[in-house]
Image 1 (tube, rainbow, N blue to C red):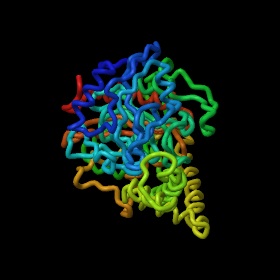
Image 2: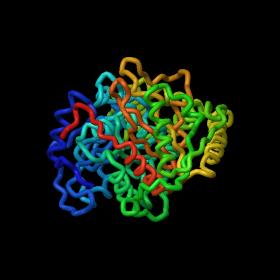
Image 3: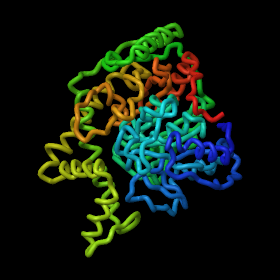
Image 4: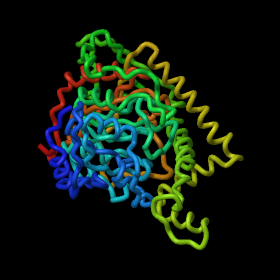
Length: 459
């Protein structure tokens, strides 16, 4: 992997763009020189601010962690440093990963590099924006319910969510442990393939990490689409809102046929698809409530005064969390009450299993399932909101299927809409079939030939 900017130039670029994008929570003013000679030698890397970095503030975009400086590096940070990478910034995110707009970040909303009146998407919006703006060739994110892949679509970059367990989560501030996946943003498929070679692998600090060997994804990269079985997820594609996306998506399917791909259409029961959002909200809020019980104002992070331990904890959590996050904790706590677990949390787990079983059937005769990543371009900042309660539409939540199932999934840009904002597509493969996913994406990359860039691109 190569970078057009040195680490120092990357830092200056991020500082220059901060008034425009507001995408970095912490900028490393004097990045440490890394003499390791590896595939990331002298490459500036941006980390989502839920990745633990020794000696560098890690807030997870929450006031309760505003002063937290870890004493250790996350496993992925160690891996990248061993290959010569230099950490240059910690990117903005929705607080504790809870949100899909990047509007409730500690420092305020991140802005879309294509048009600052629009959102980046979340919760990894800062990483997506800084990648799209050309400040870094690689930015780390996490994906619990499309938190990498939706911002990638909105910002016109490549967003990769590998198979659950493919990358260690040791040193990552958790959200929902059964769904959380470490992933990343790049601007081309070759870099995406190489990044996974570095980041993936077994880690005994994370018992959910896989023992399967890491493949030579870059060396084996092959964009030949002849004979590839690609299933178009018709139930989702039928809900495309943007006319440019509808036309270009249909054209892309024809181009795949011309290159020898075997195209089919698959559908899924809308009754199950309509359960995606309530199941996700129930499971994620419950697990988040348990995972963040340690943020109590006693052991680390900010602390408010009180006359007793209980008063300190109550005051610290009240001041430390936004009302939006506190509301999620209340929902999570309610579903975990002993009298509610069977009818809420455990029921959601059972429905999740039914959804995954139905989703798996889409892959029975397919290497890849292809969908639009989002039905339209990034919403306007003033019209978007992370509602606590509201009407859900499965076509807007469909990429959460890859989180429920743990399947590897990748979003990449397709075209620009009439308003000048990017539109993206998403491909998903079977578990640990990242090589197939990258191969098809590489073939798609050659067809699409994406050369667009936002006006704020650092050159």
